[in-house]
Image 1 (tube, helix red, strand yellow):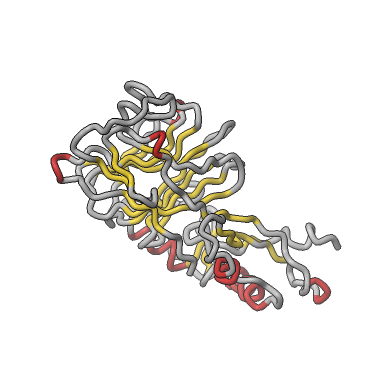
Image 2 (cartoon, helix red, strand yellow):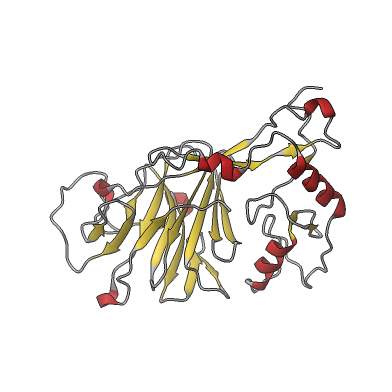
Length: 308
């Protein structure tokens, strides 16, 4: 049996926490999640729906642990020769300028043949994107930290070179790192802010004058306004009611699948996913918005990703 055929039957990672299942349970639509993850997801949402296919359930399903899937997951965890996410990350933590690689998904046979134990399963690689801010794109009112990991809005315009890359009306800045393929993840702290926009944009977006922030125009992002009004800039704009205030946002891009997903990092809850087709480079997008006379002066901070 070929190696590629040996790992086709079972997916053993939860799409909410992006880790191997713990007490997996399946929704009526057939998708599986950690019992604790799907419970937290529903507790933090006004609508009871599947995080993946968005099927809505009128009554909250009475979920049970999927014992077959749990056995497969337990078998996966006990496979010899496996390399943990922590081991993968730990070996690279000393290299600031390198992207950190984590094992995201694996597929197992039923059961795993003894002669396959020493082989490495095909893995889907997730790049923990080491995002830094690109000062050449920053609006003239923005102030960037020396390490290019934080941004906030000042009270006045600064004298900066006028370049084609710079946004002149939208108070925002892009990340330096282009996304042209693969799966990428980063986290941003938004604590203490009343307004912000976070997400990705395509390289060719209009950067001058008034801009219509929609996916058709190359913008995929989540917004906060007036401290508690969350919305996704879709067509029409999609408002999201959050039971839990967001302090840190996780952003996940699967370029080939055309997905941009947002997570509540502290609660380990999936918030929303855009689905589209990407045909050019994408860049991380950060807007701390105006400082509102000091009411929104806190910075957006790109934080290290801790793989637990």
